[in-house]
Length: 100
Image: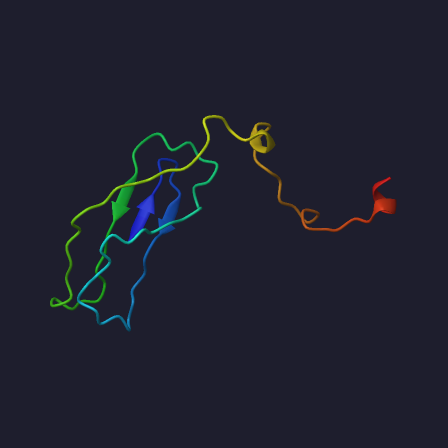
């Protein structure tokens, strides 16, 4: 199961489960991701469901789907000036003397 945000971010919610022999499926199961944090959620979201097993006896039915988005009305202050820069210095630790 893959979902694509309006900005084109592709997220895999579920991959093939080779050892799963249960006929019950995922009833009322919440799939979650943080891949789209920071994106504006307005627009067309797409969901793609693929059965790559080739086993005709291993089908399924999507009975219900809904998308729940969590966020803020305004962009958080730390990203209002633009995206964060993750460079070679991002995770460096500085002691007090080197900062002064």
